[in-house]
Structures are given as structure tokens and as C-alpha cells.
Image (tube, rainbow, N blue to C red; front, side):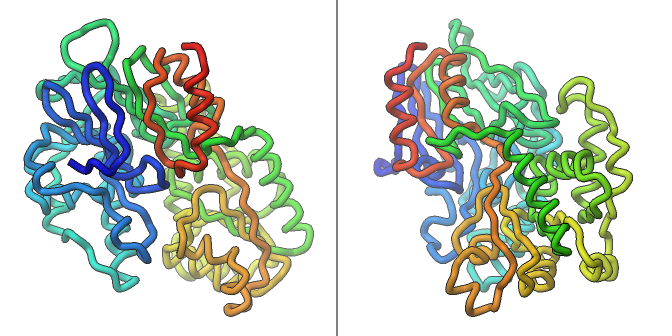
Length: 417
């Protein structure tokens, strides 16, 4: 089965990457054991110019053999290929937190709109979205068929979980799967992992070590600089996770600088602060959010863009939504304006194209383009820290190219655990 894909073989099983390991996107891993097969996430890659790389390498044969699917969180690179499983004949369940279950169908349909708007083909339809059989997991031990699943908060977004997967208790859990994990979120808590024989770990920042506080300081400086020159700062962000953290930081630290945000970001931010089960202890509703100017309608969006200067948070970090494209069109042609990309920008998306010199010239784009990563994954030091906590060097890395991970793999190989 998929022998050309990265594999991790250890004492109690094998993990085969069907997407995600050696690339950024379509995260999907099959854990094969004596007790059966579990699929870990089933996502897409937002690079439609290479259709053979958009979806994970799942098949009817694999689907027939699956005992369960574990979903770590709702983001499309982990969830938007789930209907493909049902199109291929899967009839089992998808297990996730209730928060992830609530958010995932909308994320899948957002992906479907994105594909259709670009004239590409979908390998499934609405029937298969509705066919998904979700079942909620809770933090702690869960029984999933013949498997026992330990679930903990991963610190990436509300509802995101990591999983340790095993069966009868033998002291060590066979496999740990991090999903997308962040150990330093400004708001979200992350639970420590148990000792495991092997692990599939997020390595989105690969060889880099990121200083979260310095990145936030850099973002504030860019905002202040843009406003001083009577410019508009555009921040495309996810409506949860990083988007909420960035909105909270800017409202707390930018004084009287006007800040506009799409309604979904503000709503999610307020809901996050009320959700004590997912955030750091001691965080409460922030009064600074009261000064955010919430955008609910097209008229409000137009009026906001007519303002002489300000900071604008819009949904989708790759600028593929109609709202994001509206801001880009309004702000693109003035040099005093700025666009900051704070996460991954897939090839061919507006967020990536805005940095391409030929595209900028063709479309008369004058606004300044910056990349200022806000950390929502594990970096070099974090991966080594996780290996030490897990007590294993049997690791499969994902969310970065193989070339980027060479130094990290060597560091894991030579470390003491």
C-alpha cells in the first residue's frame, strides 16, 4: 500500500504518510497495527495547479480496511478531504472534539466553494459531506472500537487535540500524533504528552526557532509605521487561533489606532475568552475588544476602507475569500498601505501572488508586502522538547519539506531521550 510514501515502522505498528510528511498540506496518516487501522486526519493542499497533489493518497482498498478516523482539528489541510473517504465507501465514524465537529462542515464547504470558483473538479459532493458520521471525544481516555485514545489540548485552535493511540496498557503508548500543535499560544493551553514508542510530529517551522514575543513586537511596529504614513494595514488571518491571538494583542497594545475586524473574528475571540476549558487559566474577557470596529456588512466594509488609515483583520490567511479580495483590491495600489502574511501562503493564492514581482507589475500592486510569522506550530526547539517528553527518537515529521527537515532529523538522531 502506497510504498512510495514516507513510512515509520516500530515495535507495535507502522505509520504511512498519505500526505503531509515532506510537504505542507493534505495531512493524512494511516496507523497500521495488529488491532486494525486508524486514519489520522484527512486534509487538502491549496495548490490546484497540481491536482495530483491536492488530496491525500487514499483508496477504496484502504477505506474498506479502516476501523476509525481521528480528526485533530477543523482546518482544511487536516479535514477537507474527509468527504472523499465516504465517496470511496467509508461507512465508519470520524472522532474529534465537539468543537471541531461543530466547525468542520463549514470549513469543508468553504474549501468546496474555493475549488468551484476556480473551475476545478471536486472528488466528492454535498451528499458525502452530509454522510460524515462524527462522534465526540473528550479530553482524557476514550475507547474507540478496539483502540484506546488519550486526547489532550494541542494549543493550536479551540477544539484542537493531540492523540496518543494504543490498546491494552503496557506502560508506553504505541503512537503519539500531535496534529497541529503550539506550546506558546497567547490564549490556548496545551497539555503535556505521555511517554510513547513513536510519534508523528508537526514540524512546520523545521530548522527555524521563532521568538513569539519578538514577532508580535514586529507586527506592532509595522502597524504603527503604516498608520503614521496614513496607510492601511491588511492582516488576513484565520477566524480562530492565530487570528484571535493577533486581534487581542493589537487591541491591547496599539493605543488609539483604529482597528477593524470581520464579525467572525470578533465573535470567535469573545467566545474563546469565555471558553475556560481551552484557554490558559486567568484569562478573562478583554475590555480592549470593545474598541474594535466590527464589520458585518458590505456597506460597513466599504466605509471602513474609506477611512484615512487603520488596521484591518479579514478572514482566511491566504486571501481567498470575497471579503479578503475586496480589501486587497481597495488597498493594493497605494505604496503607503501594507499587507502582512502571518502564516503559510500556498502557491497560487492571492497572499502568495502579492509577493510575486511579475504579478505585482501586471496588476499595478504598490502596497508593501511583509511576512511576519505568528507562531502556531512547533519550531526546531519545540520538536526536540517534544521528543524528550515523549521519550522517543522514532519520529515522522510533517508540515514541511524534506529538505527543510534535514537538520532537525539529525538533531533528533543525536539527542539523548
